[in-house]
Image 1 (spheres, one colour):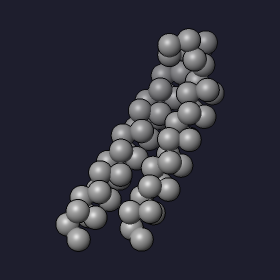
Image 2 (cartoon, one colour; image 1 turned 60 degrees about the horizontal axis):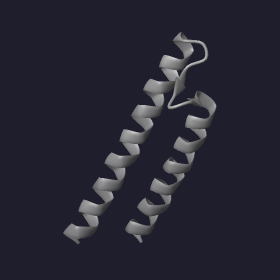
Image 3 (cartoon, helix red, strand yellow; image 1 turned 30 degrees about the horizontal axis):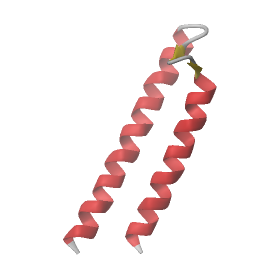
Image 4 (cartoon, helix red, strand yellow; image 1 turned 90 degrees about the vertical axis):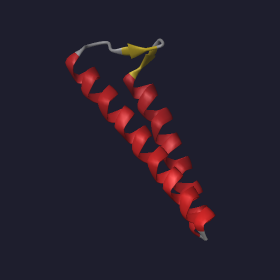
Length: 65
């Protein structure tokens, strides 16, 4: 039971971390036109982040079952 709780907490922390980084990058991109990270524009970064969030949610629901 404790292992499942620890796994759930880890997924929630990861989800919060990804969301926080995406929020910071999005806010920074609003202040700077043509904002890029490693050559990727903000739309591409947000798409990759959305896939990561979906993956975290799937893993979270899998750990709760």
